[in-house]
Image 1 (cartoon, rainbow, N blue to C red):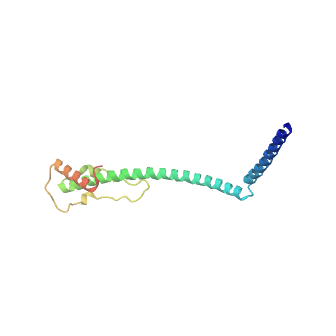
Image 2 (image 1 turned 60 degrees about the vertical axis):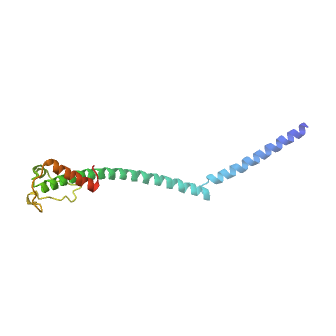
Image 3 (image 1 turned 180 degrees about the vertical axis):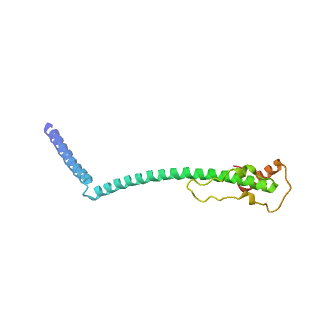
Length: 150
């Protein structure tokens, strides 16, 4: 009986050694860069590195573009408010001395900036001056119709 148990243990050890040999050959073939799978792993690894670099560059570009867009939106909002006040003053027949003293904001990149000659501005029709509260209500109502109160 002991001989049979020893033979079973020896046979199990031989089978385990053969399985380990088979696994080691497969692992060596997998990690070898000459084979198809090794080449695919190397190419995919390089592509992941390239995509990571491209993603970082896109994030930096997005951040700088977002900051520039925020600045332009702020300038556009300020210009729109000034324009609304000028229109309200022109419709009510009043001059806008505070608007004449301030220069128009320009883009930081030196782009196109319209210049207004407020002295040459004449409204299409002269209207009677209205109280300030009525003008303000009218401007606010116009703003709500255009795009809501900001």
